[in-house]
Image 1 (spheres, rainbow, N blue to C red):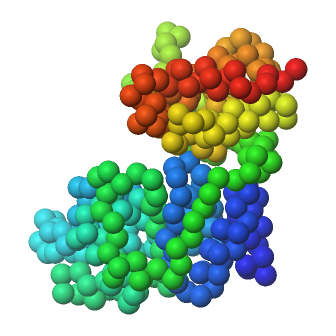
Image 2: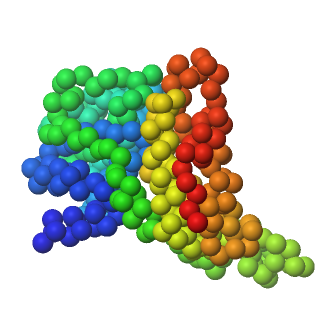
Length: 333
């Protein structure tokens, strides 16, 4: 029953990755950890966070960077001046589900901090052995195409993972389904948080509260709430299936161009959709047109296209590639 619920939750949120979801469930049931490998923007982090939500367990994300220390993962001992004593400050490793994002971007010394935790389900912190929460499941991610400034995992570390799961681009039908259901997850929560702060915010002066501006002046809370409400209105703008198919085709075709070694991802498609909706909003329309897509495709895609060395030598720019891309994909009527 639990596994069926988790599978349903994952497949509803992450479209077109049924095989990957099945392999994650296998590792979860076997009590092992997984190394999730795939290019940026195809849902690796979304898979991990959605799994944690489905399981209703504690979840921590560790964004690995080259300057990260082992204590940033495991924890440290801090001197408490008020108590005149030392206390253990547990790190983000103390959670049921731990997402080790871009694990190959941190030095081997920090990578090694995971060794005992993954194998023994415990860590040693300044001579004290601490048991990790049970169950304990590590999902590590890495990018298979970008090796500059990375630290390949040693075999001793790789062997701690039960499975290495490769995640690829979903097909166009799955991307269309994902965009039809796409709603930025942060907006509703942010608006609710702003409404609460509007209610409980302290008064600026005696007798005056932030939600009652003096002399008609705007407040930070009012502006924040208004902007978030506008963002919600943008998210609600209609995009027909034809327009969404046009967006997906543009992004998919960007990966097929000879001058591009890495094109747009599903995240790029979602970004293009949201920017197109914002364009329609500025034009005071409640629906997206292909002209909106063409208006924003340049700034959305320029920094996402990895141009081949040969094309760079010929002086090909991202703008040239986008012009070529737009000319190859038929505009829907």
